[in-house]
Length: 67
Image 1 (tube, rainbow, N blue to C red):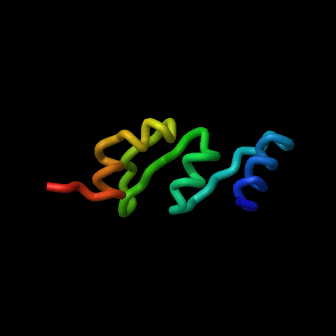
Image 2 (cartoon, rainbow, N blue to C red; image 1 turned 30 degrees about the vertical axis):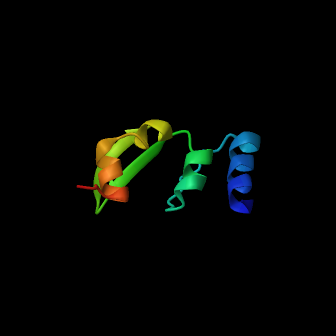
């Protein structure tokens, strides 16, 4: 929570873009305005975080698929 607030403060007060690499998807979804999703060095998605959460390749890579 503290690091998320710090990142948002930097962006809001200084107008500086912050590149964040993290696996805490709740935090990423809460603070990111754009995401790039990678899987073993391959870019799966580039765009809005809400759209990433609906993307089938992202879901398959990070959540797996049930048969």
